[in-house]
Amino acid sequence: MMVRSSISVIRITLVVALGGLLFGYDTAVISGATQSLQSYFKLDATALGFAAASALLGCIIGAILASGLSSRFGR
Image: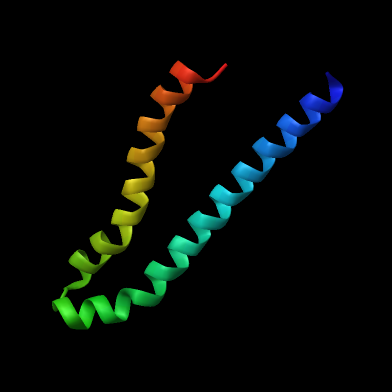
């Protein structure tokens, strides 16, 4: 039973680490694309800020939706 518990902890740790990695990657991609977005779509500062923040808004919505699923199917 101890081995199974250790495997579970390792699996959870890897999923959390992957989530942080993907969040950082997404932030870096948006940061690198802001100049191109601004010139291609002719965005002002407000629209550019919303475009960059929309990735974070998607994370918030995803976390809210995932909380219900984890409550239902989790422990």
